[in-house]
Amino acid sequence: MEFKNLKLTEKDDILYVTISRPEAMNALNTRFFQEMDEVVANLATKENLKVMVITGEGKAFVAGADIAEMVDMNSEEGTKFSILGQNTFRSLEKLEIPVIAAINGYALGGGLELAMACDFRFASTKARFGQPEVNLGLIPGYAGTQRLSRLVGLADALYILLTSDMISADDALRIGLVQKVVEPDELMDEVTKVAKIIASKGPNAIKKVKAVVRKGIETDFITGSKLESEQFGSLFGNEGEEGMRAFLEKRKPNW
Ligand code: DAK
Image (cartoon, rainbow, N blue to C red; front, side, top):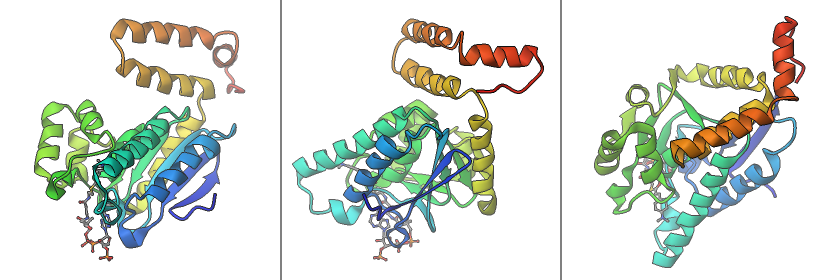
């Protein structure tokens, strides 16, 4: 597939995906979802890749779903568009390798929903966050109502969803929506630094941490703990053995 909305680069086992439709603030259209599906299904699954990073080109990370594409949709088409996006974000969330959002500017509506489907978020001081759907007489359509309250708690989520207030990077940090805020020209370096740290760890352990935490939060404590024991056990005799032997032999593990 020829990409029109995404630019891809690969370096040091990290896949960088840049959303690139700056003239429309990187608004998410049907084509974006098709391209992201292709990345998640076929490109980010390459054996050598350890981490994926998503960022935006220009002033925005993503300023929302494409209002120009949505405006003429009827109810049935709206539901279809919502399901398309929900499925894409769900598969991103379920990707085996961690996904980091590098939020360079506006992360609004569907853009914040995309960022929330990533595993964690670093932001530039220029980033702004909001769910302004009610300004348009809409509600979030890509599971933003569900992810936001799980990430920041009920009251902050409802404040953001009910007021359409655009919050700063520092406020996003304060409520736990992002994990770090840095100067704009440091954003990609900081994200790369943390991506490389993750890429240096036991690759299967990294995938299992993500899977167990993500599955665990959708189930009850006992079921989640059982899953943890199974996955913990599965690392013995292979990657875990190498990591533990390397520690005892005072050398770097050979994953
Ligand atoms: N969609 C389409 N075009 C957009 C856009 C968007 N979300 N955001 C910006 N643009 C376009 C603008 O129309 C403008 O195009 P031209 O006029 O140059 O052709 C260009 O990008 C530059 O934008 P501005 O001139 O407005 O730039 P400013 O710097 O003045 O302002 C802004 C930047 C990000 C503050 C402003 O553009 C803005 O407020 N944008 C809209 C933000 C917004 O409301 N986002 C939420 C979108 S709604 C569902 C599925 C999904 C969703 C809901 C339901 N179902 C199917 C049920 C999700 C909904 C959303 O995400």
